[in-house]
Length: 337
Image (cartoon, rainbow, N blue to C red; front, side, top):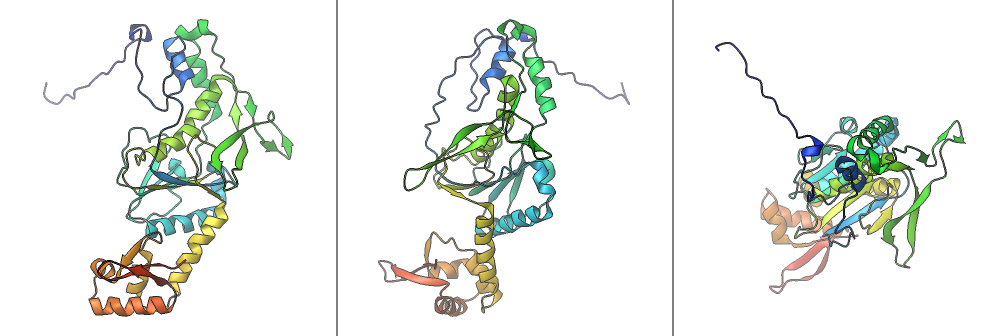
């Protein structure tokens, strides 16, 4: 009838009406969660984590940086310094963080931002770097409620344990308020074949499985939005958290070290006694790549003679250095270390 709005009702099937032998294609599924939904333990295939990924992962070791850590203005400033550097250094950076944390930072126009909890299914294979700004930390009360729901109904005969007992180094008023934590090994070894392990915050039972899904798995989900398994070019990954995941780590660092490197390079470029156009050109270069003078002319909006003068000045200052010649005897250049 005219003037009346239409309503749509969407229903989902009862659990008892679901197929008896479903095939769940989910590389980051939580088996205990599936068991709670279907009432029996699933058979897991392909969980050996031996998939080759075209990426280079750098992870910090000095803090988990959950949401409450960002109440510190100094931490915000340090993270912002690194964000600014990434946005200048890369063409299409992808940043992930808690939704309310993202609002505390400023991002350049070339940046893509996504929040934890809303990552699954997204495709950002055009991004050349992904940065985790701290780690998610779900409310335990919410996880306990979900665990109670999953452990009831058709799964009640399986005796799924709700759990919720905490194992961590958490303190209140200087006193430990949780059970001693377990330690988990980072997927990393140094040049001397030595590894690293960290105390891990965990919870018993189904609450623990859900907590892992919402934290560790969510960090992995962020990285996989850039599709490193199928990427033809290496994806750089910066995990600004010490939460241990199943991702292979190539380099470990500390937050202040990364921030210092980013700040140092930015300050060096800013202080150069060359025109702003030359500074912008330097900041657009990848330190790991080589280039010729013609390459620089192609990417610049000024005349070739101007670029030649810039390059000569930058070589004299030690910012750019020759590394050889092409087959056509064109000078090959790179950013000096």
